[in-house]
Image 1: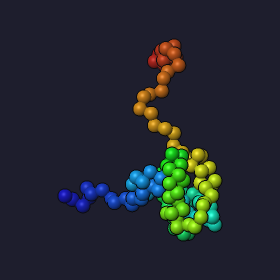
Image 2 (image 1 turned 30 degrees about the horizontal axis):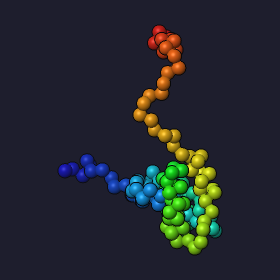
Image 3 (image 1 turned 60 degrees about the horizontal axis):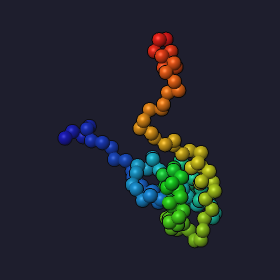
Image 4 (image 1 turned 180 degrees about the vertical axis):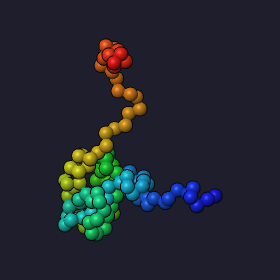
Amino acid sequence: MSSRTRARARPERTCVGCRARAAKDDLLRTTLVGDECVPDPRGTLPGRGAYVHPDEACLDLAVRRRSLPRALRARGPLTIGRLREWVERHQAPPQSEAPPPRANGAEEQQEVTR
């Protein structure tokens, strides 16, 4: 096998919410600032980081399991307000397999005749 055909290794991390492994680029790094868990999308803030999918379901799992304070080695409960706001703003829309329904047949016919 040629060295040109090999795929490059991509760093992987584990989501603290759903415990699934994913590419580092697909996860959101979080870190502590005081007693608050804040998003670190660029990955440049100092300190220990924990990774979570930028999805409300994974964030809720991480909160319910208390895995964020454990992963960040924090003492006591954490405030996650800014993290939750960031996830709500940047959450990807749900992927649907079916195409969107058309309003009516007249519009479809107009599109074809143009």
